[in-house]
Length: 112
Image 1 (cartoon, one colour):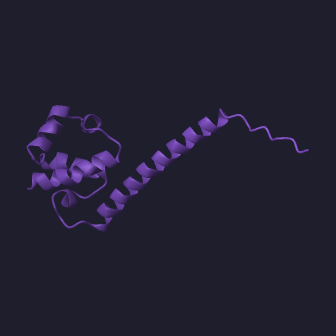
Image 2 (image 1 turned 180 degrees about the vertical axis):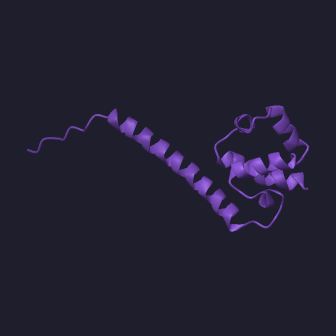
Image 3 (image 1 turned 135 degrees about the horizontal axis):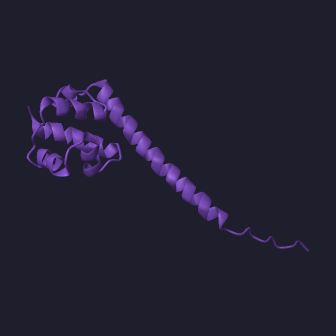
């Protein structure tokens, strides 16, 4: 099994879920050092953990192991990217509203 491909595909999906490696490791119930070891040494975890990772990331194990990109995997990654972008836009909109509330209306010059 190709660990390089596994992590090349898994890492962007972890990021797309807005999770750090530490948060992802905690979610999986493993130590951060274990996760980082797998990534650094390009090792695929045992099959049950690899399957859990794929399910957690919303893709097939076949995809993470280098199989043909399926419509499901592509759609999932695009969905996660869109959600991330939408969250950023919402955060900016909220910031604009907060700043706008602090502005005073302009006084109009009186007509003569």
